[in-house]
Image 1 (cartoon, one colour):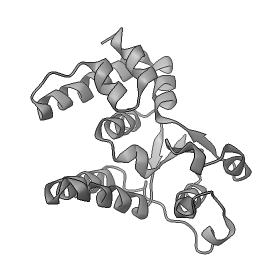
Image 2 (cartoon, helix red, strand yellow; image 1 turned 180 degrees about the vertical axis):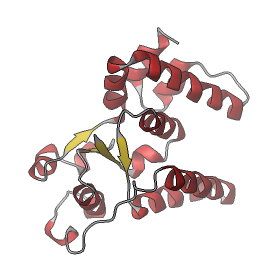
Image 3 (spheres, rainbow, N blue to C red; image 1 turned 90 degrees about the vertical axis):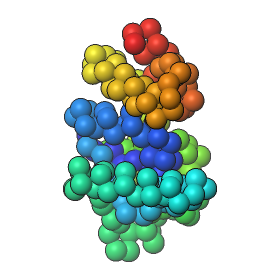
Length: 182
């Protein structure tokens, strides 16, 4: 399964680490565009130069790990597409050109299901997607959750538990599932 990751699921660190970790474990093949990655990098400007440098390094790591993941819209494709937010048309065009099965996003209103269905695509929320992966293989997702939790505690100096960490990351169903297991 090929999934195009929207900027809004790459920028929050914990959400990104859970999604990328699931891709590393083989649950799906990730896709993105150069523009999506640049939007993520630009979004970190509010964190200052250190935040932008960190995002640039993380983007470089993603590109090196998944050299085939970066897709660009086919020339002229964007011109025939419509979404409620014209700034998101490049995401849809990249998903089409990359032969994605779905777009993973939290921006539901900007990616109407009927519009995506016309292009043979689904819209998936990251929480439901990761929860479905947990239902398929709880042990691997629980292991991933523990890894993300350990890294969050390392970076923050400790104190996080899995449920509040994942709830803060807008992954409430997964948080509830992992709270009982981790």
